[in-house]
Image (cartoon, rainbow, N blue to C red; front, side, top):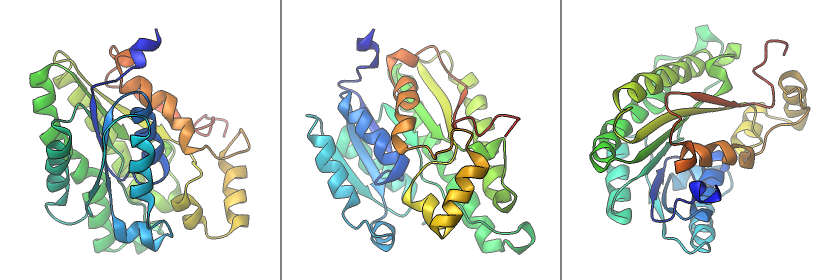
Length: 264
């Protein structure tokens, strides 16, 4: 049965993957045999204090005996997402597994969200995934094997008030996954959504501001009494990106520590 999780010889492209959830999934795919290309933005990595994140990820991935590449590119810039995907194909030869992880949250009271902030979130959280899927799906279908994993959020079903735009777009992404999975169901390509809850990443801690606010968020949203770790997403991600999940498509898997349950 463990061979069903072996993805040796497969190739994976992950967006927004130098840190946090993307990094954990990229390393898991590499550990199980896939060559990986990880998109990142050097300026943002440096801004949040991790200037060498992508290089360190590539080095660690290669320690598993696979090829690994860093694909620089700010996907919010017009045309950057298709350029990044094409560079990944050039490096890897093809893309068998696509993990659409890059996204942006801008917490604001609904009436205070500016037009620019709306446009940026719409572009990063919905338009960019659509463009990636348009590029990636046809060659996957032609080869008869492919895995698409969209990283959603508990916000898609249990929205926080100050994340109305972000939450709505994550809900739209999940709907898109269901739609496309029906279109590609007979091609050997599976398309699924993975929705994390509160995960202990540098971005999530930054958004909460102080350690006291971070602890308060955990107490308010996590029945388990802790935030998830990026590694907590790895099991579900590997399932959905391997032959082990070959009969799973058009579904959403919540990894929330119970934070999506009605009694929370």
